[in-house]
Length: 340
Image 1: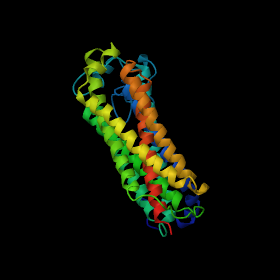
Image 2: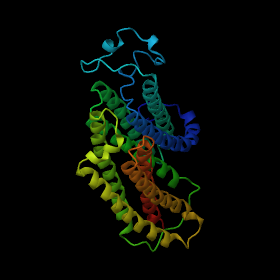
Image 3: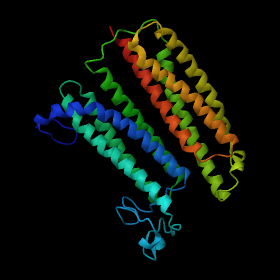
Image 4: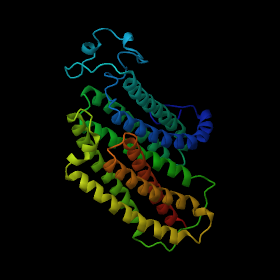
């Protein structure tokens, strides 16, 4: 038996698990994006109470598709916080159920990643630590999801639930980064001629993006309150009733753009004459700058085109992509600067 990440695995299987580590790391990252998107769709469509209980849905492992499959007193039987639930809506129920399935799938993949990380117990223990952290945080997010349901979608708990998803995203990015740089096939030279201010500014830009996401969640809480007050009608009036928080959020987006534009210019200037070994870094840099431009366009669309439903989950998905790409780039630059 060997040291394990919460479990014990026979030594004979560790080589096989090592080959699975890289695809599992990338699959974890992709699934995190899907879970974030699914959560945004749930919130946009108002499907958060589509399943009024947890972990089952209307007491079933596979939720109903028609009201005839529910008991006559289902509104009382599945009361939340002493209040009867809303009329059954098959669409909202399945939107929430799919969100939960994706979360469960993410948990299974992370558990497999945790097992596969054991093959690095003698060489790169950081893989075991990262996999274990992913498993613990994902478990916490799953528990928090049950709390959100039991408290009838309290806005603060929804926001915390979403922000913890960004912690999982950050851990997934770090996991993929370490898998890349510790691969035997990755042998590159030191990145030179990069001003000392660039790397600190890159990590600061990651923090700035996370701050923007937090501000965005506050704006979204206000939107939810306004929408409920107006019975989810007159969408063109929602933005007009927002507080100054929206102005701060909108104005800060230009600071995010300028900071990251400065980073991109410097990085492209430094790596433009280098070989293909810096291609990954250049691609990631291009992704987060393009993502910021797209995010600003989506923000303008939401503000001036009556909050179209499709733009709301897209806004959060792009923000998560920017955050991941910025963190990838910062970790990559730090690694390149340490090469001999």
